[in-house]
Image (cartoon, rainbow, N blue to C red; front, side):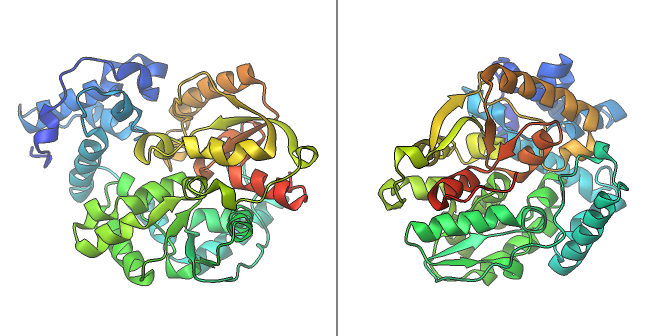
Length: 388
């Protein structure tokens, strides 16, 4: 079977340096759930005519796509690209991503429907009808409206995060405004970045969303993103669509902390006594650390506003959220999260700062106090405690 994989498949020398950085290998010890094992299976299927057995499909399906292996790889193997292309082929043939999953992902592109569904689930939560095992955060019954304050930057608001964590977007907008920027939230103009569709192998659907967003956000204003997964997806539009317009758009996309860290003098200073008297551990979302390579900016932006920043000692290992991974593979995701929880316990923070909604929800349902870095920054600047 031709998986459509190119020269990148040959760049892996099977050295194994990626193994300690692969969360699924760390918790299973199973070679088929390591990057080099998955690549070996790709070669066996594409070049050796090996059958697509259930075990082979499970190996590829249980990859979190954290791309920690890419950071560790001395050969520059484009593992994320190989895995996405493999899933594209399998999804096109109907071997992965069942109909119910496709329908669920389609709902993310309809913001009105998503908001109504969120309100319904929030009401069900209040009367105890939503099991905790689903891993949902406490959903809002209503969200604060967002209004434009200028046209210096777009603030990308997306789908699930806008419906479930609007308060983070509000805090992010307030911090940008405090730094002197006029902000225009994207709202329903850009309802979904397509990251989850891309991970599921739905490349055509992801491409359609990318074209829609590129057209909806014209001009040269920066597109600032407070979700690590969305930011990585938006920055990948040039490669996804292969057009000049998409490449130009992708160059305008910035993680919000990276954007602010480029001009830290624009952020308001606070007196030492107004800092948050907290010990804060930074959890690096994989798509910020391994894809955007912009995770250090979180520390630059946070440091002036808290008493103490501490590092986790797991070298940025994935928390197990992985977009929809924690819902599709809850057992494996939970085992990966246990390692992260142990690292958090060793650091003994008051709060964990995470710049990705999936990570914050996955850790939050395990009892970890989590906040977006920009929520903490706004709390210090405004002097108004965030809702805990």
